[in-house]
Image (cartoon, rainbow, N blue to C red):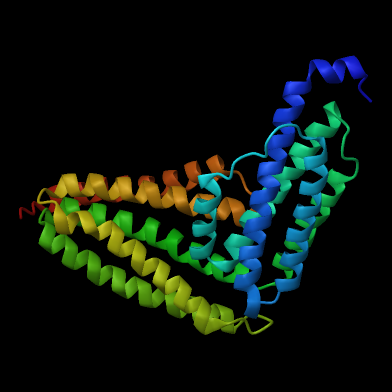
Length: 298
């Protein structure tokens, strides 16, 4: 326990911590209720409503220790509401699990300096564990894994193929045609592979839905990578823009993967970027060597 003089000396810091806790719990309550309404046909409606009620309980206790007006509602909450509405179900719940885990760490810091809410850390940890247990028992991560698989393969295969096509063909119309043909064939191949993979799983999986997610993720990635070749006249400039787009896709891909699997974001990003751009550079140089060796001029 801290003595009275020390508590008074750190009163502004304590107030800031309480206001931050209040703002985050209020936002978490709104987000959980929005997800509960969205979950009417998805199962965890009661669980999400209960977690939102727990946020309200903590708000009542925090409000008893705060001074001055309540923190204003932030635009970031509205943005988070919009974001969770458009995300895949499993990813939206995983983000809420991470938010609760971060809130637990904030309560832990409060208790170390100002023991005002005993048991709050354990309560928030329990809420996060309940949400994680639901995710562990659901098939949400299966479909997110299918999306991740489609993005992963499309990035590695298409960046390499487009680098090779650029070196050999040096004509954006031909590169677009070759890339689109290759992308469509690879999309159908990946979707079929995921279909048979899910079908062969011990529990039977959901092969049609998993194949659709994988194929859609692959096709969208292909179209984004081909876009510069449709809009920019110079082939090398288009390839450079294509690599920037690939880098942005990798950022999103590794963020999702880090959320789903609890892995390091930067480690995953550097690994994925190294593989994708390494393959692209290797194929570009190999295509240049083969073209020079065969004496092909286009």
